[in-house]
Image (cartoon, helix red, strand yellow):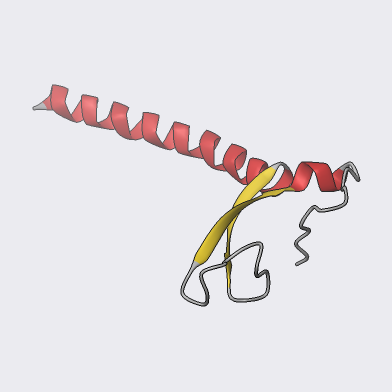
Length: 80
């Protein structure tokens, strides 16, 4: 029984160690490099959501190219 408690503590410790390392890396990546967003509504038709109001598209928002001013004609820019 005591050995099972030691194994359980080891797994919990490993989980929290990975959690506290993984969360800041994920947040930094999503904030600085790229993130995934959903486009809904008729604002971007006919390029996005050609099916109408019920459909939604998923897009990758590239933060890296905006920071380097690497925007070209035809790119879609999202402002917050």
